[in-house]
Amino acid sequence: MTGRSSGDATTADARGQREDAAMDQTLTSDALREAGLRATRQRETVLDALRGRPDAITAQELHGELRADGEPVGLTTVYRTLASLADAGLLDAIPREGEQAFRLCSEDHHHHLICERCNRVDEITAEEVERWVDGVASRRGFTVTGHRADIYGECAGCGERQAAP
Image (tube, rainbow, N blue to C red; front, side):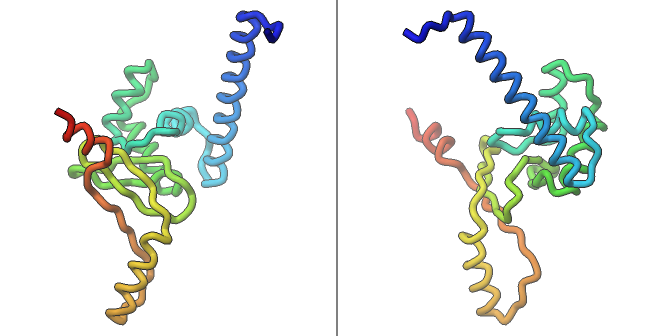
């Protein structure tokens, strides 16, 4: 027995959650400032909504989720915020069915595996793609100045769900 009552544990859990939220807020504000953007409530709200998501989301989908959560934000604000965050390099924009979907990704150079069923986006390390890019370019006498390699298909989870009886 630890000697702590369940009330003490609940209080400690709540305090830990507040500390985590404060840390996330600081990281969000710092990331915005480092990208040359002011830390506005809208930008922080959008970044917080994207943090930890495995999928890419469109402005309309994000707007719907934020409104359902009680956030008083307009669709135009969501579009502008996502565009400014992507322009600043904080988000990756991924083409999806004629519009852009957005995802908070790592800062390292990477590429994506994108599930066309559930919109899950997995990052793959640059090294996995760079060897291929270098080989293709070299065989053709081509000098690479940049590239983008996103791979579309079906993730393992969707494949398993489809195969299940």
